[in-house]
Image 1 (cartoon, chains in turn red, purple):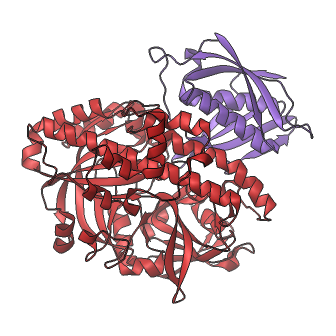
Image 2: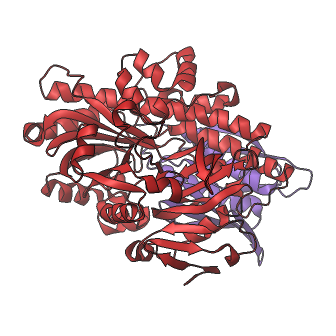
Image 3: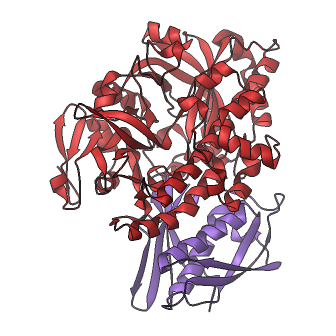
Length: 484
Length: 147
């Protein structure tokens, strides 16, 4: 098959290769995990070319990868994963994205569908009142400037000290909710200014807080380890580092463009601007990126905290910390040093995941004790009308994808195309007829985020399971949510 | 010097984001058109009054860097300083060889939540597929915004 000038070969179930011989500048093969339906859903967009573009970057180890929810992004494709050698490879802000450490958290509760359903409308209304949403939302969490610096270096530890999460919650976060080595000196005043009052705010676009019910459990043992059971109410949060992260990426792209020139790195797309991991420019970006990652973890924990208070209040019960716990928190826009086996030998690499979730199998040393025997929860949000999934890391992910899995359903239609399908109020009413209550700051957001603009997340999960990137644990369905 | 208010841009679909194409008789006029197209996506220009002037200077080693820096400056003003530009007057010719700065005077007003509906949270103007084309006396800029 040809996609533009590229050759795409199906080399097995769910595996489509872009051979490096497709283009003279590719340093390695591209590998896309898809099925026929997901391939067709890409409508011939430019994401395969973006997979090939990433393959041109120096020091890339293994294949340039794309997860089943891949689609056209800027620079890296959305769903792109690439690992770079710690000594000879590069770091690229475009491989992380503007919304640094955008990610997902899932909280389990002790409540069942039967208990919450009669109060659902009130619950969603109260969440909408208490969690700032929408463009430029601010003011959820008042911090002093010294405290803000502490957030940037300590991440979730700061939230635990403030009583917004438990120590157990913190352990159930990727990297335990903090990337060490964050250096606020590498962050501009402008980034601070843009992000200072946005802690604890949801933002706009595809971000959400959603009340979900565990509809079906597929793996009883793992679900039990995660504290999940059928009929249980859970809360999912999807948000990132807000304007703070956007500004850090904006600030560093010109720096990286100059660095690429300085170190003789040819760029096929300036959004792929990068610097050697060992260079001053590369180290400075990583130190700043870590500040944004830590900001994002506190951001999601703050919303988790507010959602817990609203839930206990609406349910007219005393707060039960033991029952209200973070199942896990994953980042899906990040670059991190990790150790992976390459050609049978351990190798330290910097894994870029741009719209991809880390997926670790059982017995991995980075897992919290409670999940050591089952593997890492892989959280895959879908759309507001169908489903989201909890999967668990599979051994095969380490050999296929540097321990990575999809991060969502993946977009099928553009925002403008979505807006033409159905107006926001019609979307709200359509969902209400199905028993799903949605509150949004902007009606346009509802139109642009309606279920049909996304691929069917079940397809994405099937491919991820078919490749062995992760295994299905539970399918959760939305009951209601808030958006920007 | 360029001073545009005419609609000389169009929006095209791009996955979860959008692509903006703007044109003018030269680079600066195209940038002024692009600026208006960008702001229009956030707040309707009809809602913005020309009450204040704000000088802006951005730097960049090459033309693409300066133009993107300028467009990102507008996003900073809107989302962080809560100030809405309506008219963009560009003062310095960005194609001069020794020029690393781009100067402009913006006319607009502070954001007022009671009168201005902010529609989108545009994260940034990206370098992806950024193009400057000159054909038949018309300069066209094309860029992708991350939403």
